[in-house]
Image (cartoon, rainbow, N blue to C red; front, top):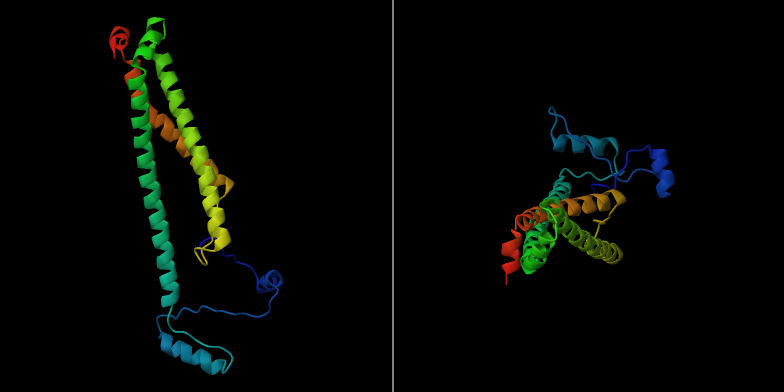
Length: 198
């Protein structure tokens, strides 16, 4: 599988797995010989010692399956990011709309555009951090359940500190980017108009 392989000497592999000998050898036929001829020569050289298979369709299917899973994971991730960004914008726009009078009061007592911008962006970041924390707990839980129950057969899901760090960074960036427009809208509100808002 993608992350479950290693290149090592036979003796080291035997010590690690507590086995002896070789269970599988992959041979690639050159341009000057067919797979049938190569298989026949191998069987003649090692009679009754091994079984040859002239087809790698099983490996091809496995690789295609892994590629499909990888592509699907990327597609789901991109959709989730887009959905998350849209939800941040909608949530913060609603928050700004509901607090228009409050923003007007803050401006009336001396808050400038930069301060309002920082306030809304800060709230957007808090929202993103909270959602990230909940998402990480759920994600780690799902991975543990899948690993324990072997739901994906030979494909063992895993997570690392590096992956978790990337998820946090992406979530924070999403919070900042998603909160930019609502924060800008809030900072541009005129105090008199905001105070009259019902």
